[in-house]
Image 1 (cartoon, rainbow, N blue to C red):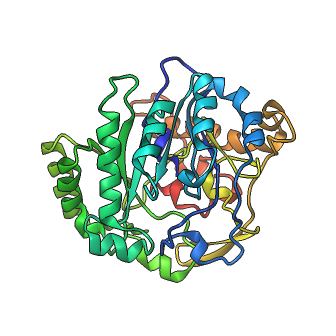
Image 2 (image 1 turned 120 degrees about the vertical axis):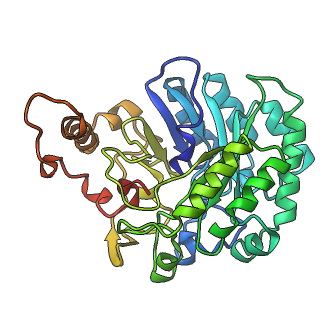
Length: 362
């Protein structure tokens, strides 16, 4: 989920780049890559609008609010009101969606509410591939939803015109369709595509579906080069994560500037540390299975955000990344007169992040 925080910036400097708020864990799609395929105790719940209102006053310090996490936001009955409330605080608001149930009336309400950005999630560039992965989704219906939203949003002018992009989860079954995806985006006039890796891997079957490798080799190097050139020629902005490991001081979720709030109000550094399942949850990392405790530093429905943000545990968690940033500058900054420290001097990541592929640039 963290892909949106770098896409949209507010007009003025704020304390936080993005807050990701889980409105619902309900989802109509039986996506084969979802963590819920592994768990029978998937917690299905909506955030009450009165609880959401407790978060709203803090949004004045946030550039972008992403109303989405593990579920389908379009299923939340108060989504339009949530957008209105967030917009009043001056923040940009949006979400990623499967597009299911996006009717003409619903689309009109979203655009009138002032939604700033929306990502449409595809799992294939052809009906056969997408429909085989997203069992309860229909490719043609989704494309028609994108076209509908595009048609209605084109009635607005910047800065009131919503930004649209495609979100594409790369798997072995669909990565070969990336060139077709570029053609599709051009055909439906979408100017941005965000490619994702599967990060939360819960079992060996899912582990086998990932396209990135944990060694220095990269199986899809030529394909990616071709797709990047094609996107450039088509004037389409393409964002792609690493497919081979690379060192990062802070992952793309960036817990120094972003955070995640669960449907129950639990404040966590990122969506991958608080899935809607019973703790501990399973994570497969480099072929080995781990039990990971969910991470929450407090409940924003019951205590102030300031008290949560300043808790010793949360401060220590963030300090790990601050120290890593500093050491990375010292190790990798060229032409330093002083002797460079060893890479082994770089502070370790917090314990829950040591088994997360995000820390390797994936």
